[in-house]
Image 1 (cartoon, rainbow, N blue to C red):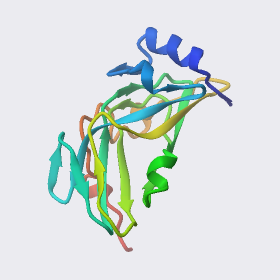
Image 2: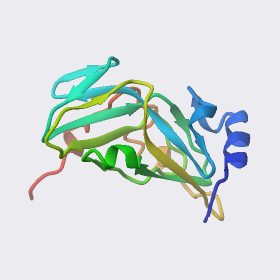
Image 3: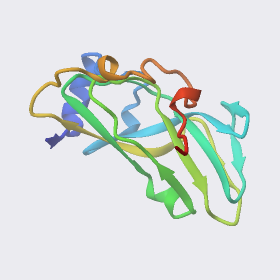
Image 4: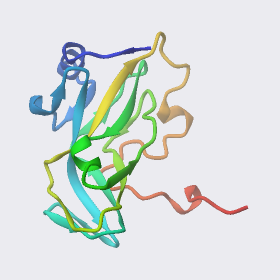
Length: 164
């Protein structure tokens, strides 16, 4: 696997791949892309407005961008250090080849104060890696549970973890 450079990312975006909606050149990094906040879900409320998250609170964020991964590219997400330094902890999965949709990211405010989140702010970096070959079956063909998701997408009841 090789990490994609800014030039390779821009070329794929021009061809309708990687990020097919809401791409921002400002979010491009030398070897990745900064995901921006589309909406925030705190408790039962989801908003596209500025939200203040209190200490010891879990919240979810959807990406503003709509991603369109080709069958030979995967992604890894890393929290931006500016949020980590304020006590925000993120838990992220690996993005499979062939995934399409908004991303839903899970965060926890471990600090002892309020932290504000504003739609459009950059919250995490996505690093794209090119596979040596295309996959036999893409994300949509294997499981596709969150394929074409929009906004914050919660786990469906059958996908929730059980204690068996």
